[in-house]
Length: 165
Image 1: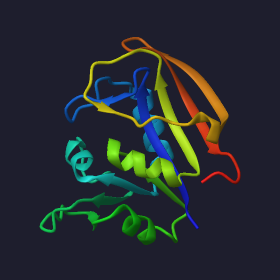
Image 2: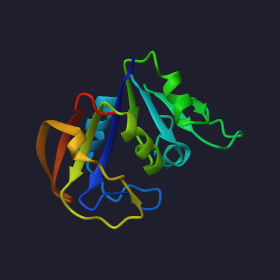
Image 3: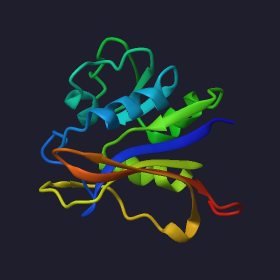
């Protein structure tokens, strides 16, 4: 059984995007994301895939969810439901859910781990991360950071409390 990990950078006001752009640029967060996801499967929606500056994400298995039966970007595995994507990934060590908002909402229901970059400021945006019930999660790691443009942020790792799914 795969470890399912939701990974996201989230502003204080839960913004994760503005249009199809990330409203901040934190080099260390991009490095952190790459370090964690490298050589693993990543599941994302088609709009998230289209928003990537370099696609597909190199050295990762890019699994893209879409309703469009004619959508087949090169270098991706296309699935038409979240359940189908998870089933496809069943034999993989780790599977990262990388967005967007509706895919995160599905991922939060089944994830074992949350890897959040929590930015301690509000940002303008129109795409929001779903509410997390922190009673279901244990914070197991916290690394506080500072970025010149963005200010304070933290890398947070949460593990789902046992018996809660």
